Each structure stands twice: as C-alpha cells, then as structure tokens.
Amino acid sequence: MCENHKIQNPADVLPSARDDAHLAIVEAGQFELNKEHYDAIIDDKENRKLVYKEVLKPHTGDAFLVKKGQVIRAEQMNDQNIAQILDWNIITPDLTEYMSYGNSAPLEGPYLKKYTRCWSNNGMLHPMATMIADEVPEYFSGKEWGSHFWMFHCNPEWNQAAAPGRSVGGDSCHTNFMHGYSRIPAIHAMPEEEKRRTLDFLANQCNFMTFQVFRTGWDEEAQDCIMDLRPGPNIPKGTGVEFYAEQDCYFVISSCPWADMQDTLENVTPQPVEISVWDTGIEPLERPEWKEWKSTFYHQLSNGIRENSPRTEDSYNYVIESEK
Image 1: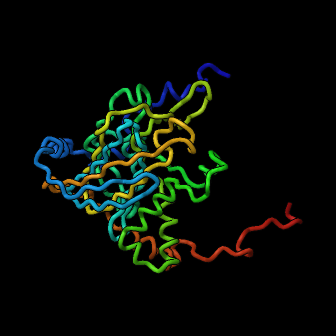
Image 2: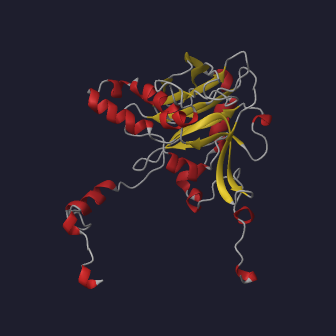
Image 3: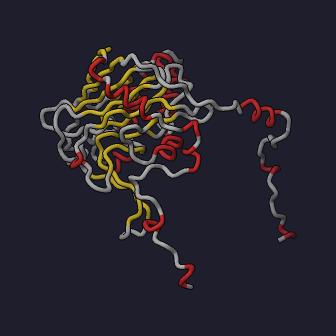
C-alpha cells in the first residue's frame, strides 16, 4: 500500500470518548448551552423545597412526575455501599414527547455528565432534562471510562442468555420500563390492547444508565470500535445524581436486576434507591424554535409529489429471464 494512503488508526484521528460531541450542528444557536443558567440552579440548592420522596424498590420500575423547574434526585441508600445501576427514560404526561437516544447521544456525547441535556424525539427536539449534579467519586469509573451513558437496556432475551435457568418471570430493565410506563395515567387508562402496544413501543426505546461503568471507543487489541461494561466498585451511601426538568415530564426509572454487576445475574442483590423531587422556583429557558415540517411532508405524500403507491409484487422491476 502506498505510504501516503495508509489507513490510519481511528484512535489517532478521532476525538476520545470523553470529548464532547463533534457534530457541526452543535454550534447552532438552538443547541447552545447557557451554563450560567444551570450554575444558578446549582448554587441555589439550599433554597429548594422538597415536593415528595419515594423509594424505587428492587426488581421494579416506576414513573416519577417532575414538573418544569423541578429537580429529581436519585440517591444510593443501601448500607452495603453497592452502586445500584439505574436505567432512565423520560416522557411527557400526554405521551407526545419522549427522550431520544438518537438525538441526545450525537448532540451531547456518549457519556452523561454535569450539564448534559436529554433531547426529545424528532418533530419536537427539545431539551427535556439537564444533569446538574454528579456525585459519583472519580475512582468509580477511572480514566477513559464513564459512570453514566446512553445505551439500551437488559431485556428478557439477554437475561435468558446470561442465566438460562432463571425464571422467565424474573425482571429486566425492559420489563421494569413496561412496569413504570404502565403507571402513567394516560397509558393506564388505555384499552388493554392499545396499552400493551404502547408499553411494547416505549420500552423498546433506548435510554441512559447511571452508576454503571462503561467505555466506548477504539480498541487496539480488537481492532474495532467497542462498547464495554464492567462491574462498579462500592460508592458511599448518599451518592446521588440530579436532573433539572425543562418541562413537565415523567422520569421512568428501572432498578436494574444486575445491581452493580459484581456477580452473576442469579447471585447479585439489587438495592433500593431513594428518589426525591425538589422545587427550585427557577423557570426553564425558552425552548428551541423549529419550522413545522410534518404538514409539508404529508402534503407531498397525498399529492403525488413523493411516490406513494403501495409496494406489491407487481410493483418491483423484476429481471425477466430473457434479459439476463
């Protein structure tokens, strides 16, 4: 191979996994971070008022209502100092807007840290919540690893592969998400068939994880880009993370059955986590403004501007034997 065209190791040309996202669009005004606004929320912590306090029990998922301008805190509360892994999703009470991994990870980077925003689905694309506190000690993940990240979640199929002898009735983050979403009033009130379709759809969305050691990036030995998990060391009781709600929403949280990943799925013991919601009295910033585009798209479909005939067997340009 010509020296001038030698393939470079991606690690030599790409930013490290801990760098911020490097999409050109993040420089646009709609994505600009007003750090002073969030610093004011952080600095005014002593004046917050407790709205309610709950416990997320092991082997469950639940939905926690957080109104705009409020903060949700998840705090490790077990005496064994086990870092209970949590999986999170966010949705508005009317179900029209939900957190998007596809928008959040490219805009914010693969790891969540202080000032990371959780962005919503296309057609909306607003920040739904912003991380304002990360109390996990530095030793928890160490160099080149993260403590909170965008990811998918364990599910019945993954867990069956990991623990074939485990009961199919055992929980997973996927079924915990279904459990949590089922408690949202708009979903609970649906006819049973519609409810089940909705739970299946929402639980299949990607999420983020907290208190889970993770890394992504180029692996020299594998000569590939990898996503890697490892067990989390013990952390002090009282360690928490906090998110500021940019609009009224439900935080749907799963208590991961893998606990801290220090043992097999059959042997680990998930721990309770304290969930508290606090009123800051500080209003969110104005949301990004976007031009409405759906009506244009559907006009194109209904008026033949985009091909809209159904695909049938006869609609494909099959090759005739004599033409081969």
